[in-house]
Length: 164
Image 1 (cartoon, one colour):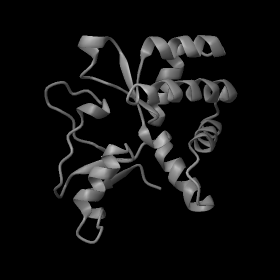
Image 2 (cartoon, helix red, strand yellow; image 1 turned 90 degrees about the vertical axis):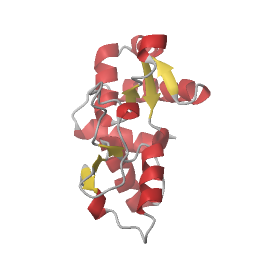
Image 3 (cartoon, helix red, strand yellow; image 1 turned 45 degrees about the horizontal axis):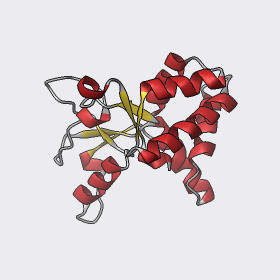
Image 4 (cartoon, helix red, strand yellow; image 1 turned 45 degrees about the vertical axis):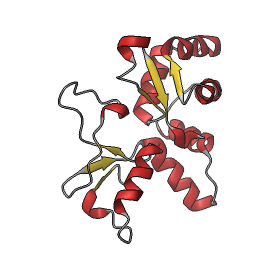
């Protein structure tokens, strides 16, 4: 499964825009184009445009989720995360899964948002380096910094709603 897809490749019976909007809301596809002002790679800083020549990326965790769903008929975020971490050679899989469960529970109560400080506390409790954990979860597409909340609330992360 590819990590990038173009607008032209998405053909859904005249409902391409609706499909893209849904996929973006669920953070299954993220527009490649970013704001020229901040150039941040945060999901909330991406610009969703419905036209030819636009590209969208599929986070790695979503590729694993979709692959597993095709095989099993079930949406299993933690199975996908475990497989993804295993394939990447991660040593602390059990601890990362434990921390991720805590992150998801906390974020669900807060509109899918969680402060970096809270992630750090969960990581330390589980014996995981907070910076490494955050970097790993970001690179997989499990979380993304919220660029619009940074100045007012400190570092806040958005949790990918497809993890639920």
